Image (cartoon, rainbow, N blue to C red):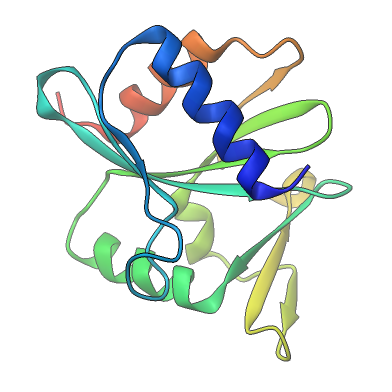
Length: 147
């Protein structure tokens, strides 16, 4: 599955739950900005980075790491990473980018992480097919919005 197909699946399922604005930012904003900007009930919002995993690995561009670290330094907590493997969707804490990567790809200007080797709590939840999009949405909101 390509990231564009993951976006379509995510958007379709979020739209079925509620008609809040969910916008794909990919290739529109500056380098490093996360893929999706979602607004929830009450005006809360979340930046979501969509990733396609392969064999338990996912890759993040250096510009995305830099962008997220700058936001985290400003106390932003409105970011999350969703990783889609063939049979799972994982909700991953954006704090994962603060740990050293498991692989560095100098030529691609990216770093990779193996989900099974992430610290406890970095993978917030994993969902198997058929994906429970309601629970995925509720978890994203709970993890990224202020109460």
